[in-house]
Image (cartoon, rainbow, N blue to C red; front, side, top):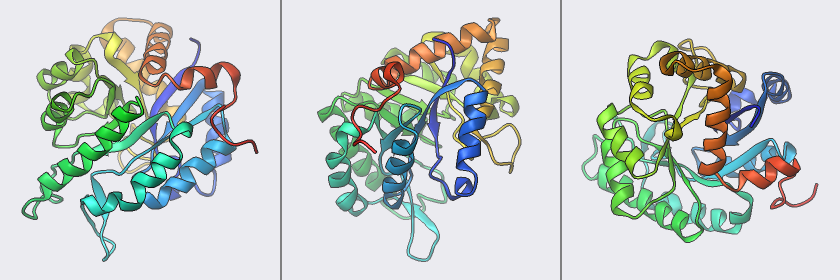
Length: 279
């Protein structure tokens, strides 16, 4: 396949409110063929679907509840089961429009898990969304910061066969356990400044590697807004590490993306999201 696929991007983030059309144009000009858009919070669900409908055939939505949520005092906290009360029915009602369930997972960063029992509550939230993904035969788009090994273990124990671990921050040994289970790993442009991501790519076989940007985060420069056009940086670093051409990395990772998110296949071939309502 000719062109990149960005497997994890937050285009519903407020940082793109003023120039989304320009960002989309830049991505197309950079030979991006498709972008998977994920939310973090329930109040972003409608926005994700709206922009994906606006750019149907180019943007493809996932829906899910992130393991870190906003608290009433505008801070952040671990996800709790009540966060799913509105989210799950909404996802179920739009199940034919989405290509995956995400961004979901675990985040065991000490700041978010200082409350007793918070890790177990995150596991409950994650498991319910895993069950929904299995029910509808959809892949998971997974966050696993400071929880790489536990996230992989939870997925294997719960019979998950289709998953993408985005921006995986665990070690190569735990990643290989996920690779053996058939999971994919998407690599962001911050690989240019991350020895851990470089070592991850060295260890993983090419048939388990995808590209992502996680825009507006995880760009090549800290504290600078990341954009989907930067996906070529991920590709270039993977090519360098693997001793391959950028063209081959682009082709393989895009073919992998269509295997990881099979509902994208018809969308990309037709240029139309056949699951979305007509404009």
